[in-house]
Length: 464
Image (cartoon, rainbow, N blue to C red; front, side):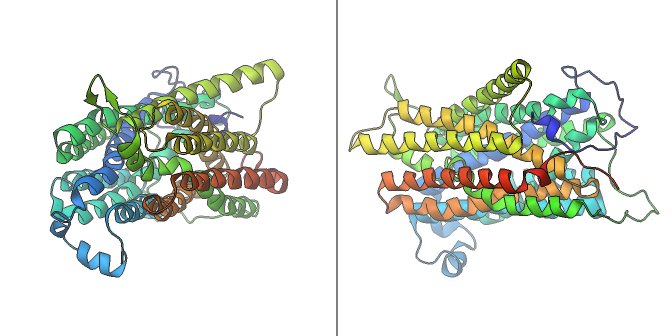
């Protein structure tokens, strides 16, 4: 089953033209939503790419750390005994995990009170504010808090609109989520090249400022897109918000998804480590000179994003070809099992690189192979798991269930914040073997889920 086929059967809003094919044969709204999400992801990944390097190489140095308002108190309460890279890893883990926790609240706010559009707009404004605050070192913690709140209001409320552009049975849905994810990956390719280069070569604040400008652009595009987007779910003036009712068949599906969240968190640990200890390792050990010029370390993220983009296209094309040739295709959990195998292969590339380098600089062959295999794993796990959640989500809780999906990222980044701090004190080979083991846990768990809960997660939502 392809990604977009694993979206819920939703009522098609009358306000949107049913036969709209203005964007690559898809509704025009998909183009707008993909572009807006691309702007938000450019801003987010600009920040995420620079964050650990910024802390390790500048902000947390002894001569600068005292400028950050509230950090001394926070270190005494929450980060006791941590300095340097372990402190940067812990802050990164808390920030990136909370970024994926708040979409649940954002989904509830949208489903129960403000509606998706007003909630998303509020999130974009708060995120823009947070990016611009990064220009002031003393406001670092407030900037992170603003970004956490803003992403929470924004993220689930844009993904939940994609499926609603298509009425039940519309075959164009078969590529919608792939296109959406491709837009994300294009933005992640561009973010290190533009914001990463500015941050590392010109000044950290130029990189963060660029992220804020692009976020404002995304907000303006979303405001312009109104006529081509699905109807909002906010109650009209004078009407009460509809009560959320679940059918008897909804509860087993929701329970299965809840159990799946921590498994996803463990399975995606290697992928989330790319922005944390991996970048510190790359900055210290990788051979990043080209004709005597040292390349920005953040460009490793561009390599990863380029391969992720390519593999999304290749994997989608492969399964389309395979399905056409054989008449069958793995279901969502089957693809996630395959993805875990490739994630393990990617992790082993890092183990080999660490084991064979000695005191010499590490060439880019094994890191690039890691990104290749990890990207194939990504293509089989990330969009497929999102599609599985949106497919199973009850109509009344669509945005909220998308928020629950991001709990997996919360867990993964929280673990990465802790495990990433071990990089400074642990043998590097052992450090990366831990990440191979996490992918193996995902492989075993997804196989167990397929056996035990495959029928519960199969099929479309049926209203009773």
